[in-house]
Length: 70
Picture 1 (cartoon, rainbow, N blue to C red):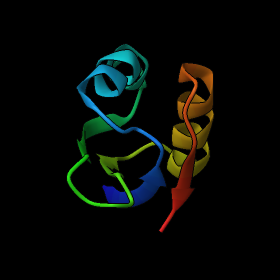
Picture 2: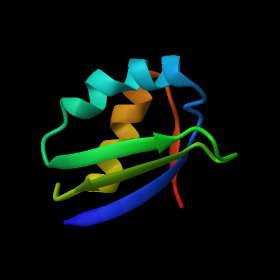
Picture 3: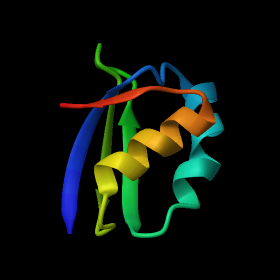
């Protein structure tokens, strides 16, 4: 199990609602949350996917957002 944090452009509840089905559909992703109260809009994910970082970045891109590992 690995936990990663990403700086994102997910800014509000509407953005979280948009990205939710994409992240929930990922295999190997145990849990995730976005802290929209901090300037970097940090997405924290926990999972055991083999290429978790790459999969998260690709999933965010499909949903119309960006994520950069921090």
